[in-house]
Image 1 (cartoon, rainbow, N blue to C red):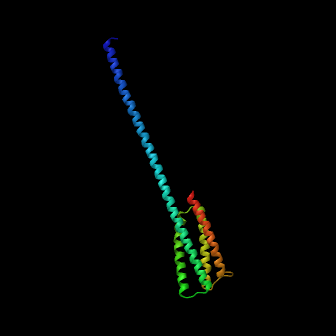
Image 2 (cartoon, rainbow, N blue to C red):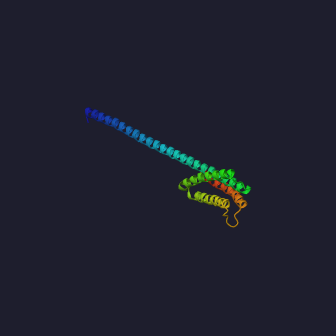
Length: 182
């Protein structure tokens, strides 16, 4: 092989090596960029997931707070009405307490209707039980008001049942808190 051919071969090999090195380097840069993009997409998806989870938790917390508030107001109104019946109050005072009871009952009913669509089944079963108990007590008080009480229904019995409902609400609240902690 003469010097010209050797020089030409060295030049070709040198140029090919330089070109290959540039191609390999560019390929590695492209791969690194793709991996960085995928990592960034994963990070954004994780952030979005956490944000959605926090928003859902906030919405549940808000619903549970509204349920607790409306159930407490309903129970307070039931208790006030039972005390008014027990005192034999008549007229404007009883009418005001009856109106407060109806407003509290309506607010609770609206809250309960919304929760029926969103609560997980185990909690919904507990809320249904509470709902039945509240409405049964309401029914007793209304029957007592209209002189249509069933056998064994008394104002004192309604008061005792209301006292038990406060405990039931406390248990329900504990279940709601546990759901938020999960």
